[in-house]
Image (cartoon, rainbow, N blue to C red; front, side):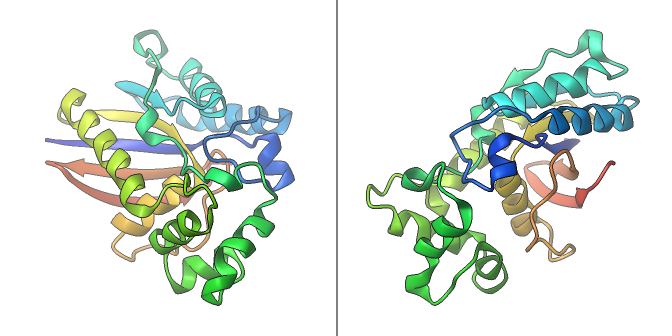
Length: 218
């Protein structure tokens, strides 16, 4: 069975504006974030979505509602929370100024920035470094992270039908991680996706392929 996931990053939040670590922590969409999401909704309004999901973060739920309310199939869509597609959990570093958090995490390994880590060691290694650096070791490592993401895709497999187009509103590092793992080096994924940008994923009999990454709709 083959279906398409329209993987959209949520709109800009206040933590995004302030450049703070925002994994399982949450902050509201900014007015600009809401407006850009509305513009993205207009670009996607004629895609006949058969189902709509978001993570359980308010920023993703609100973005999903904006997209579905403008969709041609809005009367048939019932947005559902799917916790498997939460953002990466940053543990102790949640809410911290992002450059500071990544410097603390990466300095013992000769790296300084998230961008540098993405380019030189990859996002999975960066996850492992963050769990190691977390004094409580609450941050997710790569194995923990992919266990829940894989479970999420398996859930979609069980509810999807051949040819479905499924909306899934998720998060920047989650989308970037999926693209890095399943993009077959077809895209430059060392840069994260913009807010309200679209990544397209084909799920075919349990196999995942990213066919477009961080496409800006606006």
